[in-house]
Amino acid sequence: MRTAAGAAIPVLGPRLLDTLELRLEAYQAIPPAAAATEEAFWREVRKAFPPHPDYINLENGYSSPQPMPTWDAFQRHELTVNNGLSFYMRRRRAADYASVKQQLAALAGCPADEIAITRNTTESLGTVIHGIDLEPGAEAVMCDQDYGTMLEQFRQQSRRRGLRCVEIQVPLHPRDDQEIVDTYARAFTPRTKLLLLSHMINITGQILPVRKIADMAHSRGVAVIVDAAHSFAQFVFRVPDLDGDYLGASLHKWLCTPLGAGLLHVKKDKIRTVWPLLGETSVPDDDIRKLERIGTHPVWTIMAIADAIRFHNLVGGARKEARLRYLQQYWTDRVREIPNVHLNTPSGPRACAIANVGIASQRPGVLADTLLDKYRIYTVAIDTAPVKGVRVTPHLYTSTQELDTLVKAIGELARA
Ligand SMILES: Cc1ncc(COP(=O)(O)O)c(C=O)c1O
Image 1 (cartoon, rainbow, N blue to C red):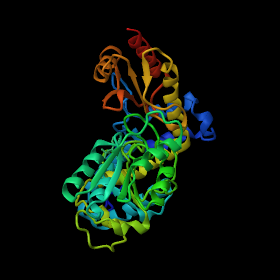
Image 2 (image 1 turned 180 degrees about the vertical axis):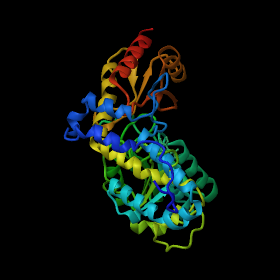
Image 3 (image 1 turned 135 degrees about the vertical axis):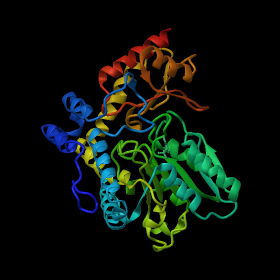
Image 4 (image 1 turned 90 degrees about the vertical axis):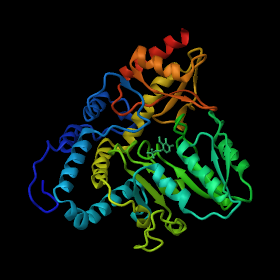
């Protein structure tokens, strides 16, 4: 390996991705549906993740650990930049950014000039929420299960600019897509200008029919902001197919990048509608790069996005989705009928990795503590008005044996 200036620097370790690629090569022909239960393949994938803590981690909804090959590359990128800081920033950074964007765009299925790299979904969507002009008296629709930080950002716009925020309730177990579309439609008035939509609701894992809701919103002249923090790279979709005008995602969640990597997608003809928060004027108004100015920051995180994409493609997006759905259904199917147990997540294709379970008469916080203290299972308590339970999020490295432990624990606690 060379420094930015070209001098040789020591390589930290073996090229772990190459090694993994060789190990996974034998399995590459397995079709996604069959791969979900191909335990030998997942044992290899599991080896790529960091050593496991002394508890069963079923709280991968916070963020994902980087697989070791990505972490290894991340360390090497930091060393590369550190060895020629100004040289790298002035002469190499732009090309690396462009290359990472091309790769992200290929993954997202959209043109690279519609993508900005950010630090996370909060920044991506905040850039939009605070950067677009809305007339006084305009209304924005959102739901009570959207992510708190987004709701807070909207509330600030309410205090600052007089935006009216209309918060609706989305059913936990919708009959069909139309019920959800109608729920949103009922909240619209002639003053509605903006809609916030979570592609996957973070506290329950419910996947919303974003395209159908967006079509309804567009037919009424309402612009759509999609929160894809959890959906991006957890399951397969093309960003343009959702037809959101603006979309934000956190790459450190399911793409498994280092912490602090996000994506903002803005439709080409909407880029002009967003003011850059930090006053970038060196690029034209319709150039998405105007939304990337954050000053000097750890660029090696961005360089490592390319390594994370390579890992993702090695596992295969469709295989990953199939496995995550399988793991979630593995445990939810086994607890669904237990008396006193309620699932706050719909069954079937409306969920992927994440699900939420409650036990009657157990407060969510007590349930999460008991799972950890008594069974060494780490989850997170969700105690909100619409949702009471613990969120359970397996990952690619989760084994079915670990889920058996969860099922046993839920059964015992429900009977206690
Ligand atoms: C639906 C949703 N939106 C946004 C966020 C914020 O993500 P970040 O902290 O990476 O900005 C989260 C975090 O869990 C989330 O679940």
